[in-house]
Length: 230
Image (cartoon, rainbow, N blue to C red; front, side, top):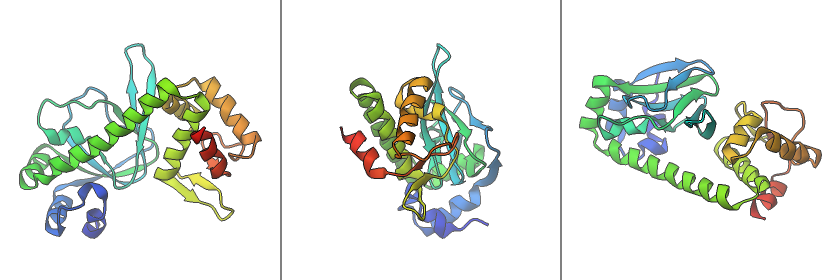
């Protein structure tokens, strides 16, 4: 059962009011997505809005040359597919893939049109979400043009720690979903070989825990912050 109070606490739905959130919960459809399943494809018509309840989505964008870039991860309480709120003829700018098993609250078709008509504040929420993601994209473009690879990787790891970090009893911080070196390489705009070299050096220096192929554990956050500030 959905908890409207928990939904109302998500930043995306903040300010809509208890009655509006209850209506959104009733109008939406809860669905599960298995890890590695595709939620929507880049350039497909934007016909559905989704709110992540559990798990993480990975948002990736492909190029005409066949390359792929990991743009961001979308976690609990965050929306995916917000362009669907902005009217017909919108298209998804990237592909969303389940990085873990995911539970979503989704609105599509008549349900989506109905909640947009009854709650026009949702469009403002969509604009806020897109503004935040645009700022993040601009920051990353600046980093790609001006920063060393080590700094870009440090900033990528620190963003993920802020988004999904879980503190361990020994003071280390674990990113709470599977994360490969290829993902970090794409987020930092570098090759897998270069990212692996830098991450292995950090493991040798005790900044990261060693040996986790899909697991990132930050043992020395202060050291990574220093690299990011250099």
